[in-house]
Image 1 (cartoon, rainbow, N blue to C red):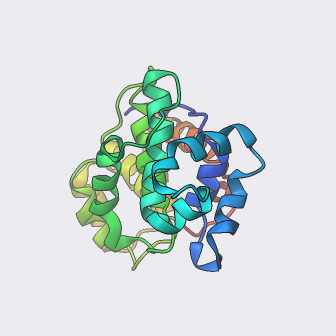
Image 2 (spheres, rainbow, N blue to C red):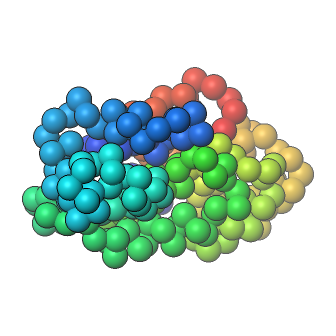
Length: 220
């Protein structure tokens, strides 16, 4: 079972990816999340200059829309992770894997949130750490079909099922999900080492995305 690293993800960007953007009425409110960080706001202004029509970052956002802006912003952080400095322009090819990951599980998520994109972003950046690459098995799609409807926190659901799958195997886990076994009961069926690794990994992910709710409340 792989060990998940703590990744120092950009807090402003993570905040937006975790948000229900239906509550925002204008691009200005989204950009206000970045605005207090003058350094990154300047990077965004430079990187998106080709889309702003000399009218500033807000105009670039209006030209691109949230999804395109989100993907291009992710490419800026990925470029910094890979090359050690920020780019002068955005490059959506850097986020192709994240987009494919998001597409894999989109029918199980709430579309107004970008939590699938967030998990993909974490996994992509973790590839450039010293930790073992984290691959989500293809069987995960069928396991998610056994869960109830769409999940707002699909990222946590995927990670929990991932650890159950590695520890217990597809056949046993499928049986438990079909019979409606509670997650806390499935967790107790794992050996102690697997339980400890799972707890450590979830703590690492939670710290990386500035979120502790999963450890305080039962609902995923």
